[in-house]
Amino acid sequence: MDRYRSFRHLVKRVYAEPLRWDKMKDLVADVRVTAKQIRGDLSGFLCFLDETVKKYFSNGDFNAKLDL
Image (tube, rainbow, N blue to C red; front, side):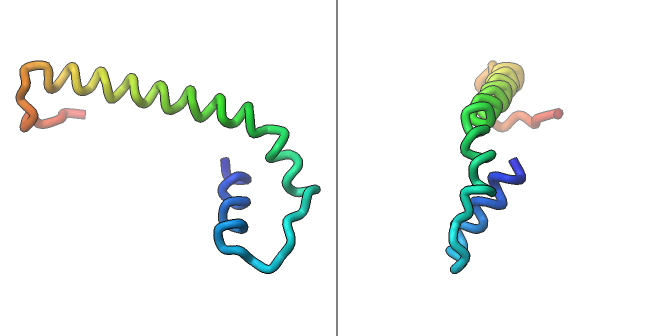
């Protein structure tokens, strides 16, 4: 992910440096694998949130304290 963040930083800041394919090609080649990993991580996090909501708010008390 750090390589993608570095690339995003470069593009977002619009430096005058031209994009270099030799630095980008590995990112492009790995993008599907990285996207799959991100989807898996997000899915796991959403499951965690869902279980937390069910556990702590099943009685409708939205003011209950979370004891994480």
